[in-house]
Structures are given as structure tokens and as C-alpha cells.
Image 1 (cartoon, rainbow, N blue to C red):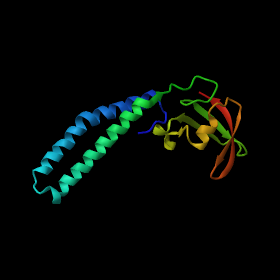
Image 2: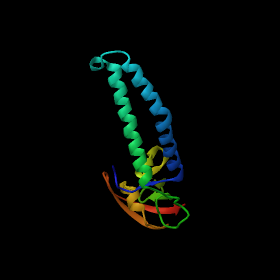
Image 3: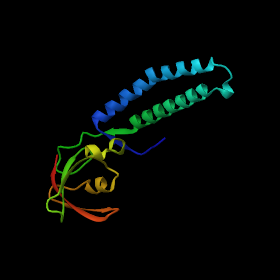
Image 4: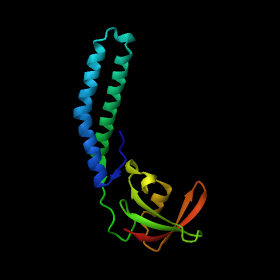
Length: 156
């Protein structure tokens, strides 16, 4: 499994822990019942339901292993409350040269990055470039569209 440190907010850590508990108790039981039903249908070599149940079982077990590894190695980051951008910080940026066009992003670990919610990964070009900078700093970011310059307006 992965040995890279994953950063999680307390909310995401709790959600993943709950998902793991559900998979281990309810979902495993459902899959086992489906597998038993499929076994009773007869010849296993040509039993599509049995093969589907086995695939489903493998997917559930893979997800359980991944979550256990992730939660074991995760660093829960409170973030925010600092004048320096860190994981968990919400950063208000203005794009230089675009008449005050502004953006607000929260820097999170890659597991919970979601652009539609304004959450960017600490491993993304912008997320990694912002780390360690303070309010008022200009940050240069190499993007697929070329070099972009952002000014940090506020950090929460």
C-alpha cells in the first residue's frame, strides 16, 4: 500500500472511518449473502451471478484495505488560524492582470480535493505553490496554460 502521507480534515477522517465501519459490517454481510445465493444456483464455472459476487467481494475488500491504510497513515490537519498558507487553510487569491478576478480555495489533502467545492490538493500546482506563503505575497504558478501570478489577499 501507499506510504505517502495523506492529509485529511477532521470531517473527512470521520467520514472515511464511518465508511470503513459500514463496509466491514453491513457491506461485507450483504456480499457474503449474495455469494451464498449465487453458489446455490449451480455450476460455478458458468454462473455469472457467482462471478459478479466474487468481483463485488474483491472490490469491497480492496476498498477496506485502502481505507485502513489511508486512515493508519493519515495526518489530521486542523489548518487555518495562521498567517501562513498550510493544509487546511482557506486562501483568498486575486489573479494579477485580470482586474481583481478573485478565487477562494481551501488547501486539502489529495483524498478530499474537489474543485466544485473550492478544495484544491496540496499536490496540485496551485496548492503546492501556495504552501508557506503569507497574506500580501505574490505566488507564481506553472500551469498548463503557462505561468500565472496570484496575490494572496487573505488566509483563514
